[in-house]
Image: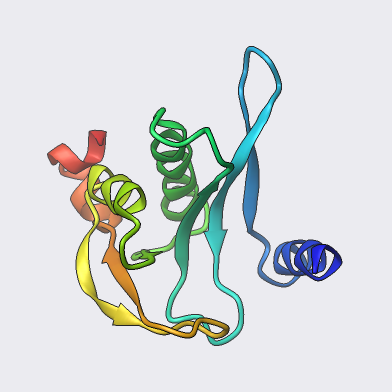
Length: 137
């Protein structure tokens, strides 16, 4: 399974030209999770996703890194919209989405998922350029 996941991550970069980054703490170099852009085959839409390793939640790492990922998606890649998928009951992840200014936008069942997940829609680049509160989440 580890090999398959590694190949998926590398393949995504090769095929899409973007993917997820490892998140490291500046002062220690400790890796605390993965955050970035994700859109594998048959995914509902291009996503900004975050996965923190156990014990590193609730410290703002996901929000900070997801803001950088969204800026890259909009400013460099030219995306005009993005979603984040959040498992039902994952209140921490839902809170990150809301801090980023994303709003609930239905449910989806991505490939490999047994049950639907919540879709959060991020404000588009034009809304962020207008200086709304979500621009500075």
